[in-house]
Amino acid sequence: MTAPDKDSYQPDAVDRRIIRATQQGLPPGVRPYRVLARSLDLPVDEVMQRLQRMLDSGAIRRIAAIPQHYALGIRANGMSVWDVDDARVDALGREVGMLPFVSHAYRRPRHPPIWPYNLFAMVHGRSRQEVEAKVAEIARLLGDACRGHEVLYSSRLLKKTGLRLAG
Image (tube, rainbow, N blue to C red; front, side):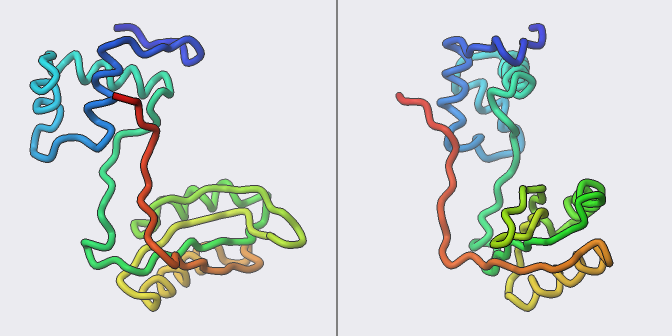
């Protein structure tokens, strides 16, 4: 299979079967693609090639493990928001995103005077004190490029799901 043009990719019937079969996640186990392929009566190489084509086209953004934070005892979830010098935010944002305790980091537009923050970094911990210690580490990394920050804590657990195809 050749890489599809990002603007022209259209899933065929087999792609749709793969999407439907994976909407709730990959099968648990050591070889999830093999289990998936068997359930679809397809060769595992074809399933993997089709998933790669969907990734390359942008039809799916990523395949990743999604930990169940609460089941792991991680109950403090803080979105740290930062007012970082615009000339340095991209480089520093990449460094923040590489910290092992940051699940995702991204740049967002400011909305002065109400919202001065342009860098967001999600931090998880077993307690707010643990999150605060990790946020302090981010502050040290940002140094004088940072003019201020806040931590916004989750007040309830929301179940996130992606796009679902009908039956």
